[in-house]
Image 1 (cartoon, rainbow, N blue to C red):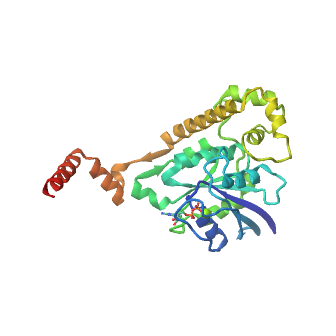
Image 2 (tube, protein in one colour):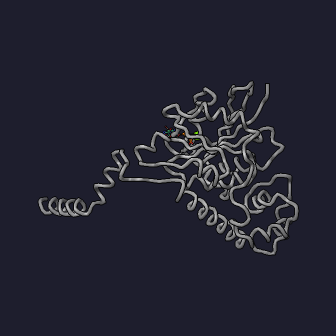
Image 3 (cartoon, rainbow, N blue to C red):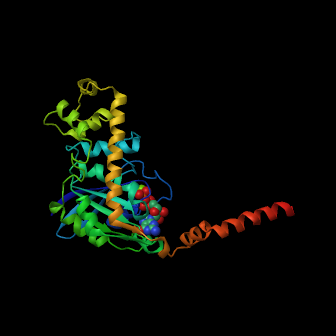
Length: 291
Ligand code: GDP
Ligand code: MG
């Protein structure tokens, strides 16, 4: 019997707790609003091939940049390889309707070079929203295994378990390499910290986290740049990541609103139609004059 640790990571409201419940058979509270999971929750799952997994349900976080308490819980865990709950696998949970925003965090996790699985959840919403995905293309671009899940319909959890069991064959390759990320920015980091874990140190400097008990001020002063310049570089990094994500989704994701079947999409279509716009406008005028 082998024991591994799996961390569920993702933006708030992507269905992490729902996935957690289905993996563990537990019944944590599922929220309609962000932030219901304020600290990491631990459960267990018996996987195929005699593998037992600790499953960690982490607080929702938008990126590894901001420094809310929730995000620090995630950052601290991912930066500390000595933590007994340091994950063997990071399962990044995303919502198919918010892929663009959700993938920012995914690319950052990927760059930490942890074996990663991308769960695209809420796939029951794909047909109603007219969304189609080119999974082989996305897997190639993002250098990851993708598992399509709908916790609502109970789809994809067995496949996810199978992929977790195969964690040793998962890619640890970053999906944005130096040619995509600002070269100048990387050069600065490289010069300041030869042979170091660049990204992790970057986090130490810009976040309020401190693993390895490094002296943050010492590190910071070894940069000639002021802190606000560092923040600017971090913003540049986010822009680069979104450029990459946009390019990837432009080919890997189609949203055909004409084929959307849900009521809201239909309503949106009707409301954007000019004639209906005018009709509503005059309708309101009529109401005002009548009263
Ligand atoms: P967390 O914040 O990431 O832990 O997300 P939760 O598990 O609390 O779920 C957030 C919301 O998404 C809840 O209202 C869930 O009912 C809903 N949800 C979760 N999974 C699915 C799914 O597969 N399909 C749909 N349509 N909604 C889902
Ligand atoms: Mg939750």
